[in-house]
Length: 142
Length: 460
Image (cartoon, rainbow over all chains, first blue to last red; front, side):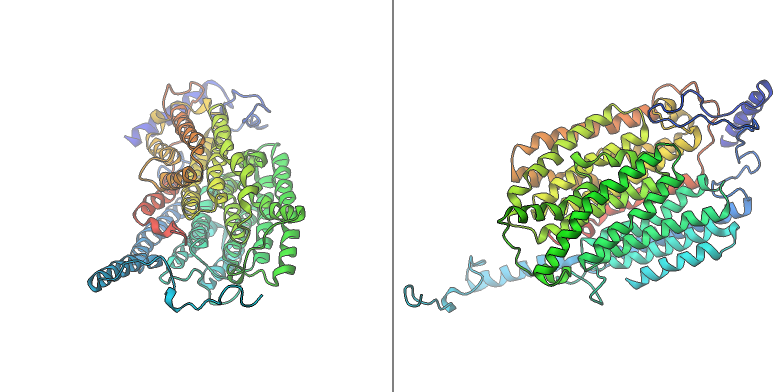
């Protein structure tokens, strides 16, 4: 399917080349300075942009030398997917309890069970035991 | 920290000494190894915040996700730039990669800094490689104007910050974040105190950007080459958010009244910039304004200083960094084929490049905050926290969500659906490199759904 598409595309480009010498496969619809557009390309030699797929049917987008292209693709996929995402992802998945959140939940449940078994209040509004705080009497020292 | 910094530093000799044929392969590989190593920073199994082996560089649950994002982005930038730089002489290619690496270095040190002055110096230092990338490798003449706006907006905001930091150093005696977190914030009584408060935050508000000071962003994002747009959208905006979160801890409690105008500006900015997106004809400009819109929500979340606000801000920063960078990469695939950013020119691309249409679809779904992606989770947490702060904000945030969905859908429909543009004669098929680039952007977003606690910060 892809191969057929490539043949159709290259046939089209060849037809175009034949009819208008120096034709460019770049949109010429905009004038320079229009909002969001770029200046129209004008090549003095009338060269056409040749797709790198013409010389190398298995172009991966990395480099025009086919051997470097394939190796670059392999390296990028290996380090990007196999190492960084798969191995890195597994590492991150098996990291211990992040921020001790699961521990905090377990500890809270354990303390609640413990305090309910003893019959004391589960949670006290005061952080410190109020009976142990000794306050100076009012009006004593100024 | 050194296990990340030293390999990044060694990327400089790699770039300059490797043979030209294998330049991009080796730098991509090394950058990906650095990214994998940075994942070890995610280990946080104590209850204390900071993890540092020395007093100068450390990580805590706020800086760690941003550090990993920064390290992840360098290989993506290298992959994205490979095509458009390949026609340049080899020394310029090496210079380009050197600029990207130096930017990476400054960003790692900025996010890892425990001393606010080191953070400030790195914050300013990131401006230089970015300016060079925009003005030297941008494609249109407007790039000079864009560079000027970018540089001077940020500098004008950060000079008051320097003065404010020096005042703080004189008062407190130390600017180490490890110490400052335990100090009592001083009440702000005089007018000078209030100006000092504003000076602490304005640099970061300009960087985020806040709606009123956002004019540099569309220019810089549009004129920058793809790597510049990616790093701007994904990381440099988050520098502002990170700085704000660090500073605002020591600025409360009096910030409550002083923050009002900024919160309102941020919320209004969500609506306004979202509406501007619906009227854009330039694809990159649309994505740039959508960044302003999302960051407005982050700014609002940070300024209300609640735990959920902070958590939502961090989640949204990470998720937006990946999604926005993905959208810029997609826009670049169009640009490399058509040499134009106009939306109308690249219509009906689904019929021409169906696999790329899948990536367009997923990236736009991420941008419009589709559940269960973390983009939505961050937005929901911030919106809930803002509703708790004041019920009226739901009108603006709800409207903002609606407009975000509209312009994301608009972007997708305009580029992918509809009749194929008749001016397109021959479109080159999608490269494996482009598919890999998109996968490396979007797979982390999906994986983050499975372990979101990495992004929750220290407040949750």
